[in-house]
Length: 296
Image 1 (cartoon, rainbow, N blue to C red):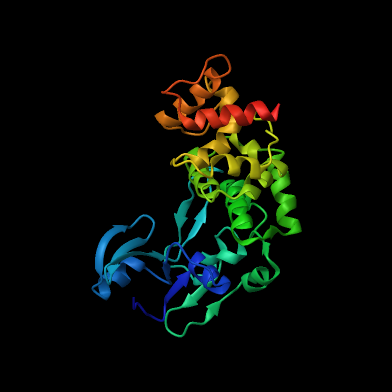
Image 2 (cartoon, rainbow, N blue to C red):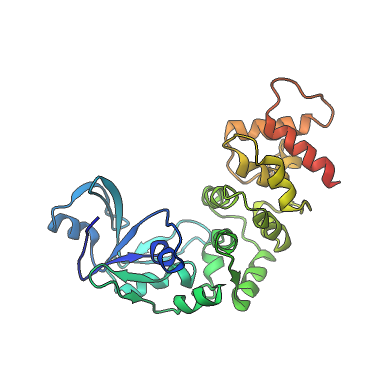
């Protein structure tokens, strides 16, 4: 796939993953300027545009890719979607709005040079996750879950100041946040099915993001992973999270948006306290009940 311009850059995860020599799930481009005008000027095969966000989806060699305009963001309502501002701003301003320094690098599509304003290369070398400003978690607490995901995926850890700011936020959580975004990050994190993710989730009190009355469920992550590794289900990720939600299944305490199937899993898990397993009992509920009983 050939797409080059002096103002067009690979950005974020694709740059990080190339440095780490690991497979990247997406190829994201950033245009220093107006990406929609760029796509029109070069007569690219445009699939979709979003002028409010300055993004355009194009098809190149049979593959759909997204090109985003450089932009800044502000959070007039903390924990919710940001307000897009300054479309076409300088590249450095765009990179500064991102979550961690390891994701705030760009690579020129012309000469392959890495643009690294915030020492992301050093942090990759040191296996450290570092936020870019003091209010990062206040603006977007889902970054805490993203940090967990990157920690277990790459074997990184939070740098001391980032950990301090995470602890500070988790001691004073603003529960008025976008739980649809929380759900997305939880799915990506626990779908990895890495036991350390659950251990860190509990040890670092990240589970508190799920609700005010949530309590730690002290089960070793490897026990959960071993319990679910052989079952075929789309809900493996949910088994990890449901351990914290089961006691609140029939109340209004659950902030996380759940599907009908997920609600049924929780409901059946609670019923198994005093009912026997039958042919209609979800296998996820059976596993959850066993895990919860063994945790007592």
